[in-house]
Amino acid sequence: MVFAPGEKPGSEPEEVKLQKASKQIVQNAILQAVQQVSQESRQSGDRARGSHGSLQLGVGELTKKHEKK
View (tube, one colour):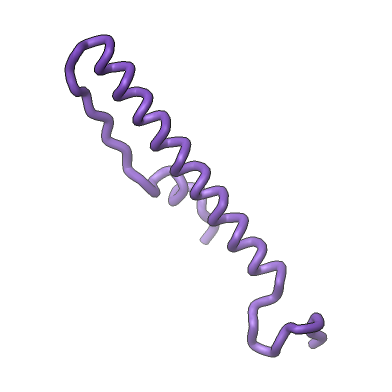
């Protein structure tokens, strides 16, 4: 097995590290978008009804269904 410069036996290959980082970035972006939509929905509902509506979202549910096992 050939290792890239600076890579030690037993350490994760750079590609695996990049895949994990990419996955984390996508999950964070999805979470931020869901939170923003939830906040905007609450704000628009408060203005329209003059009351506090709530929107329950299962954080993490969106990404769990699409994860590869």
